[in-house]
Length: 84
Image (cartoon, rainbow, N blue to C red):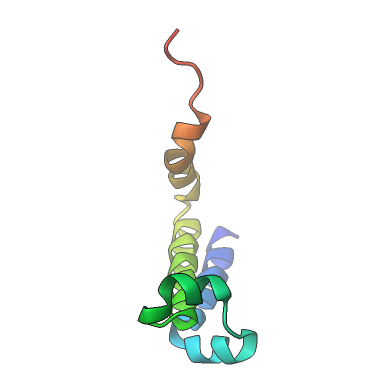
């Protein structure tokens, strides 16, 4: 099941990276990306970055490494009082 879900997320991310112009036409410009990345492509670059993030998450899910990755990323927040 993880492989199927990961492949779907990977496919959506790939579509976002490859067809960023179609995403821009379908959903329009995103103001945050236009302000922060305006000189470098704005919303198109934002769609590509979101697609790359989706590809990365899809690969983590396919390889069943998402739990370890989330544990690593969230460990500073979830760390309990180990000083005692």
